[in-house]
Each structure stands twice: as C-alpha cells, then as structure tokens.
Image 1 (cartoon, protein in one colour):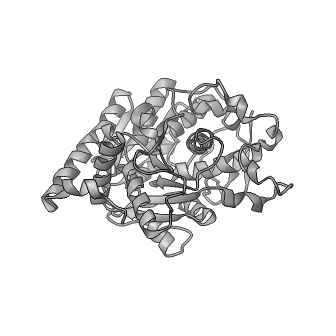
Image 2 (tube, helix red, strand yellow):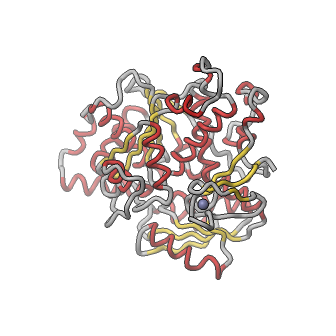
Image 3 (cartoon, helix red, strand yellow):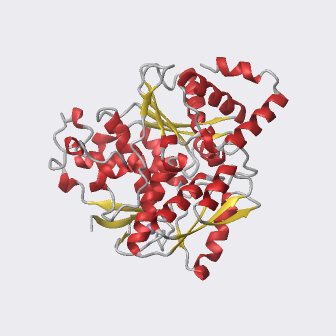
Length: 416
Ligand SMILES: [Zn+2]
C-alpha cells in the first residue's frame, strides 16, 4: 500500500487507508491521503517522468497504488495567452467528459473499485455527475446522481447515456446533498460527494503537478481558480506540499540548507478564488476576514458549477487564500458572458462560463494592481462550453434583453 494513512485536516487524527472512509468521525473534517514522499527525495526525479503516460496517472508515486479506472484524464494543455504576456490558460475542457471533474472521479472510482464498493452516490451541480457516471460505467459500478433539474442538458443526457440512476431535484446542489445523506445508509451507497471521501482531491491535485511540470518546474506567481466546491484549489495546495517533500520544487532557494516549514510558503503561487456574483460565499467570507463561509441564499448564476451555496471545505479554501497571499473576486453573469465570447474570439478557446470567470478576475486584479503585467499567472478553464450551450444561449438572450449593445462590450473588456 503506497498510502501511509488518511489524516483529518481538522484534528490530525490518522486512519488506516485499507477500507473506504468518508470524513473524520469526530469532527467531520476532510480526510487527506498521506504518503511517505520524503523517502523518495533524491531518488525519484522529475526526469523520471519522461516517457510516462500522458495522463494524470504519470504521477503514480503520489497517487493510490491501485489499478486506475482511466479514460485518459489529465495532462491537459497549458496554453500561452495570445492576449497577455506571462499568462497561461490551463485548458481542462479537453478532459474526458469535458471538464476537470474527470480527474477527481477517476481517482475516486479507482479506489471504490479497489475497495470492492458496488454503488456510488453523489450530488452534482452538473459536471461531477457526468464524470462520475462515465467512470462508474468504465468500472462496472452503479452510480446514483442527484442534480438540480435545471442543470445543463449535456449533464442530464450524459448521465443517462452512461447508465447512471439520475434524480432531478427542484433545488440546489445543497438540497441534492441532503437527499444523498438521507438515503445512503438504507441504500448501501458509498457517498462520493465533494470532499466527503479522500480521493477526488487526489485526482484534482494532479493539476498542481501539471502546472509545475508544464512550466518547467517553476511555479507561477498566481493561479486563478473558479471555485465552487474548491477541490482543485485544495488539491493543488496539497500537491505543492508534496512536490516540496519530493524536492521537485523550491530548489532555487536551496540557500537555506535545512528543509524548514517557513521556507516554502513564499515560493508557492498566490491562490485566487473567482466566484459568480450571484453565488459568492467564499468572496464574502474572505472580505469579512472570516475562516468559514455562510450558506449563500438564493444562489443564481448560469455558471452552473459555481452554484455552490456553501463549500464543505470552505475552511481549507480560506486558509489557502490567506497562507498564499491570494484573494477572492466575484464576476457578474454579464461579465462572465462577455469574457466567454472574448476568450473564444481572441484565444480560440470556447470556455465553460466558470473558466471564463478567471479572465474577468485577471482583468479586475490587473486593474486594481494586485497582479502586475510581469507576473506569471495561470488561469484555469475548468471545462468546455460545449457542455453549456443551452445555458450560454439563454444567458445571451437574457443579457441582450437587458443591455442591447452587449456584443460590443465583448471587445473592450478591461483592464478595469
Ligand atoms: Zn478530525
């Protein structure tokens, strides 16, 4: 077993990794898989990755030791922006099922199969459900998915075609989550809700490894990450810690001989959350200086993946923003729509609305001076707009009805 133990992110309790676990039984804390990576320092080098599979499973030593359930997820393009020097777009839209959710579900379903779990359940704002359904199909495991009834059509259809049991709910992802929690024991479902099992983080963290590898093992100054549940941000931060343990990053500051904990943090990127103005609980908590967020009332945005009224791992996200010297910004649906069109026409990337929100955040933070032109910044596009055609079209109509000249705005978005 490559994993040493599971560790609670609240109380530090250790649990064995030889059976399926959800959250810490004492305090509900998110569990992290821990490996003895320091043992590999100097033995496993970045050069050893050459020639390995072009998927997230190339980082095998930092992932569970089980036969992967894979559809080729990860190792997505890191595209230099055509518009801004020093800006890169990490295009997660090229993953199987068209979003970054593939990574987390590949890892979670891999471990579910490894443990012999037969039925998986999850609430989803859309893309996580699609990814779960696909990987469950590939693993021969049953999937039970609860989604708001107004998710993009693509999400409903893919879950159906992948053979999942889909329940459409008149409510938000939080209502869907409650339904899973109420029924899971009776139905013998294993709950793979966001951050309620340890392995979706393990899949998502590979984005952090890829950012480092694709930028030549030098971390960027900042990462802008559309934050719904925030698993990717939490995962990338974990990846930075692991890569420091492996000696893969941070070497250029090797002047300090010992490997002290204070050494590393300033080397890591500023982590920046972007949320939709119609659902921005993390931004609100960040601006109020709080360490947890409150349930957002009347969450509303066409960026379906950002309609998360309260993230289970909010305490981890806010801690990362603080430790990294990052920040949190919101973008209105109108700004997101303009940015979607702008990115498509300027970069050739038809991004999910959540991804396009990263561009809005970048513009705002350049305008405010938080980010400078010379800063290397990675913007995450978390999915493909092809999964949101109905949402994008509806938003176009809505915006055009309110602001007839919206098409002109697309060309002159920011700097603010
Ligand atoms: Zn705990």
